[in-house]
Structure formats: C-alpha cells, structure tokens
Length: 42
Image (cartoon, rainbow, N blue to C red):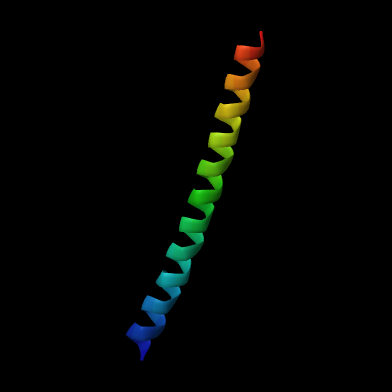
C-alpha cells in the first residue's frame, strides 16, 4: 500500500517534469526559429 502510494507520487512527479521539459523544448525551438528568422531578415 505504502509502496503503491510512493510510486504513484513519483509517477505524477515524472509526468510533471516531462510536461515541463516538452514545454521548455518547444519554447526553445520557437526562440531558435524566431532568432533564425530575424538573422535571415537582416
């Protein structure tokens, strides 16, 4: 019972971290693309 609770807590934490990571990588990609666009614009 305790182990199940513990693993569930860790599972949700990992899910949160994964969501945060994908959001961060998306933001990084957008930033890179926009900076590339600006550089090619000049």
